[in-house]
Length: 84
Image 1 (tube, rainbow, N blue to C red):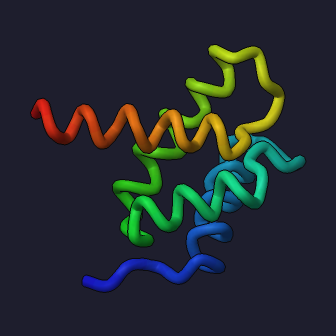
Image 2 (cartoon, rainbow, N blue to C red):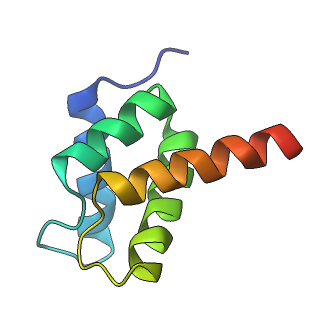
């Protein structure tokens, strides 16, 4: 199975945010791009990274999920994968 394109990944994230009731942007373009690259466009990986990035942004007191939050999620999930 091939992954989604970067545009499809961005739409996928925005669609899920809209379903949750969030109308305004929550993820920066840089964060979405990093999530897409790291997940290779695979929906399950996108979900896992997006949730981890949301947690990282919240823990840092940020209103937006930025690239630093996404990078933290990528690092956390790559460590989890190695230890599982």
